[in-house]
Image (tube, rainbow, N blue to C red; front, side, top):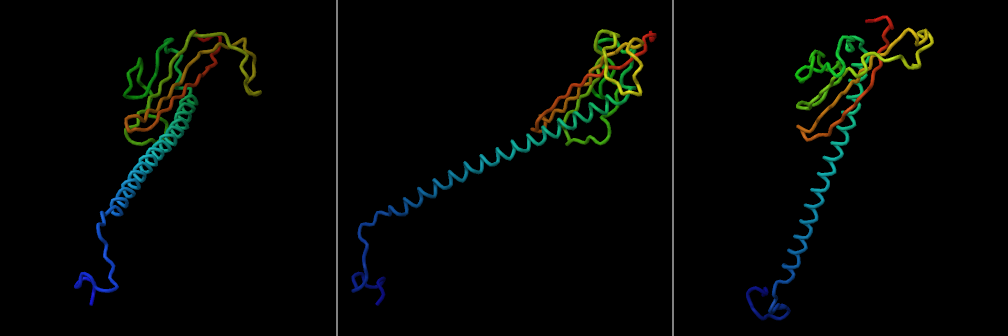
Length: 181
């Protein structure tokens, strides 16, 4: 006869006064495991976002350097009639002469990332040419030259989309013949 039908059969053990502490102990351990798992998930998600932000910041820095070099490579970006302290800047930016076209080709960034670039004329208007290191084919002496100084600034801001930012500033010295007005 099974133990369920007869309350005191021979060979059936009875548990008297079982308070259910094993169930309570298992529930506490499960709660602790759930808390640990939740903490691990939060920490790993934070580390994942931090790694993505570092990666974007490095990418933005490299792209800012590339844009600065592309802007500096074009002599048309450095008009000598620009007054000291005035700037040429990208479209949609407030400055003295917002005439620079969009960023050079090949520099794509995610949507809503702000790219600001400008070229500023630095003083003095024309400075004596320092002893610049020129390629051998271009060496003719510095006596017949003056220098117009410019500064190329490129800033990439990813904060609108919760990413990092980068800023590059590059100086450009433009050789001008001494007899130039």
